[in-house]
Structures are given as C-alpha cells and as structure tokens.
Length: 132
Length: 137
Image 1 (spheres, rainbow over the protein chains, first blue to last red):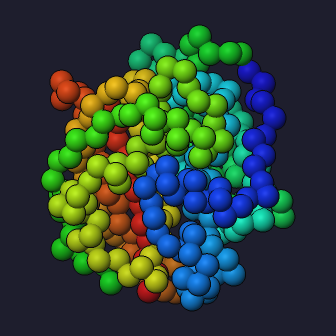
Image 2: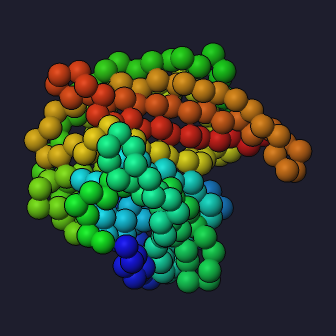
Image 3: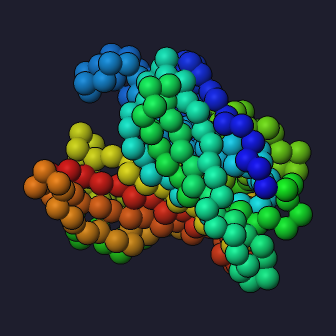
C-alpha cells in the first residue's frame, strides 16, 4: 500500500472559502466578510478548519475509497488564510483485523507552504478490496 | 461563559435526506472526485446545518463566548459504509461532556463535546458526529 502524492490545493482564494461555506451551510461571516474579519483581528477572511478537514479526507478517500471510511477525526492547529497553499497527505500507522474486516489506521496532516501544520487527522479505513 | 447546566441538553430530532446534488457540491468544495455511487465524503454530515431548526441544536444552550471559543476537534464515526444519496436519516444532538483543564499559561480551558447520532429508517445507528469546542478564560 503506497500512499499517493499529497493533495496540494492553492493558493487558496476567497472563492474557495465561499464555495465551501455554501456547500456546508456554515455561513459565519468571519470566513467571507472582509470588514467583519478585520474587526475580529484577522488580516483577511479566515479559512474554515472544516475545509482543511475535508481536504485531508479527500486525499484519503481518493486513495482508499469513500465507502471504506469508518472513522475520521480532525484537530485544528493553526489559522489559514487566502493565499496559503495547503498540502494534505498521510501514512498508515497500523494494520489490523476487526469484526472480520481488514482495517488500517492513518495519520494525516494538512501543512501550509511555510511548513506549519494547520490541522492533523486520524482515520480508519476498511481495506478489503481496496487498491494496494 | 460556558453554562455547565447545558450538560445533557438534547436537541429535537430532525430528518436529513442525503441529496445527490448536495453530495456533488460538497465533493467539489473539498477538491474530491465526485463519487459515482453517491457515497458521502467523510465530513459531509456537517451539512446537517441545513436540516436543523433552533430546537435541534443544543449547542446554543452552552452559551460559549464566541470571541474566546473555537472549534478544536471534529470526529465522524461510521458503523459500516457511510450513507449515500437517497438515504433518509434521523439525527439528534446531545451535549455529552463539559470539563475544564489548566492551560500551559495558567488559564482555564473549558471543553464542550456534542454528539449527533444519525439513524436510518429502521432505527439503526449508522453514523455519529462528535464536535469539541473550547473556550479560553
């Protein structure tokens, strides 16, 4: 099981943030309203942590399949803004059998172009029938 | 300031239909290939926002200060293959944990966890979402 190359997205645009907000239903203005974001002390609209979560999940499902995921946990670590380029990837940290299924646990990171870890994730996938 | 009385608060159940167009829209927004079989992306259940009215969301009861609160962690658990387009789910949210920790700087961090359970039409638990928020003192 060789992981695919990282999913690289960016430089992020305000449009990327708005597209995710529309798709998710989270319309917090700090993610699109420039005056609101600046009044809250941000240099620009703040990227959504859940967008970073979704990008890491997309890297993993692109490899192991969307129907094979059984657990996905994300912890947010640093702020991301438009102009940042995000790189998402991970590695298998454990292989095991559970309830008759072959499973793998992954650890993933979403890293900015500056090398800052913006978010980390932990995922479990079923690997029976998945690409090796 | 977090209201610890919110522990155990439960929202009204709500229905959520997994719609093919919303799955495609979400997949594009997270730079994912659109699954031909309509299986949701792993974080898609965040779109439960669209299906809730005020009584469904017990997070309101927590009264976390928005200027000092943030979304620290999010988890999804699937008890089998994730839902797909055409599925109709019933969901319900509950505040399951409120606890404090000392921060490295000596302040108090208050953590709040809300779990949303998603069941299929037969009542089988198919997925859970666990949201962790934290408020700094």
